[in-house]
Image 1 (cartoon, one colour):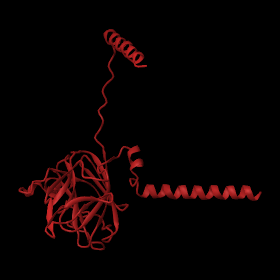
Image 2 (cartoon, one colour; image 1 turned 120 degrees about the horizontal axis):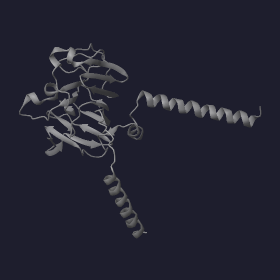
Image 3 (cartoon, one colour; image 1 turned 90 degrees about the vertical axis):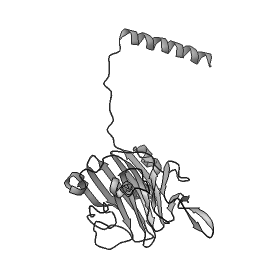
Image 4 (cartoon, helix red, strand yellow; image 1 turned 135 degrees about the vertical axis):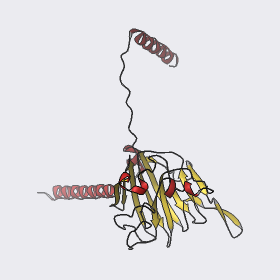
Length: 266
């Protein structure tokens, strides 16, 4: 084997190895590339530069050094929560069956959460909180602690996660929440933390199957990025109908008219 052929084969081997490594990484974090996500039906809920499509509920601003500042803002392609007061940032689209993916990085002693299938929040009505009107998947700086009904990734106050897979404060976590009918599955950093049917849990068996998703401001700075969702609602396919003579004539006349318009535009 000549040196040239050998070098070409080595180069190909290196390229293939690198490609497989990239593929493995994309499979480990399947939605970190918006282009790849779009090609598989995922929709970006965050455009990367402002809060279009989102609604601030509860505390909207706070004072710092005599200046009024927003609790929620965008910085370097991330949604940032300053952690002042209490409230939610709600995506303004109601969903029933869906899958939601996002990444978050919290500060020390942070308390936050992800609301799903919830009502719009009214600060004057505590029963409109996502943890009551729908579900809240808890986010808490409690890495290494035993899971319970108030720990990270719990269905807050109702169901403890199977394990505590949260990373320490300052590190990025990724979570995917899938809700289809009464089935809820939550994966945190590649580990399944919930895989249940809500009808098997007395306290949540009658929880709604549709609603809004949101992220929570409950004390503590936290960042969110790469927020994507997929609507899993079944598509209703219309039955094909027979096209009668009149319909065919109308189609023919429309086609002729379109052809004349097209020729006139040339």
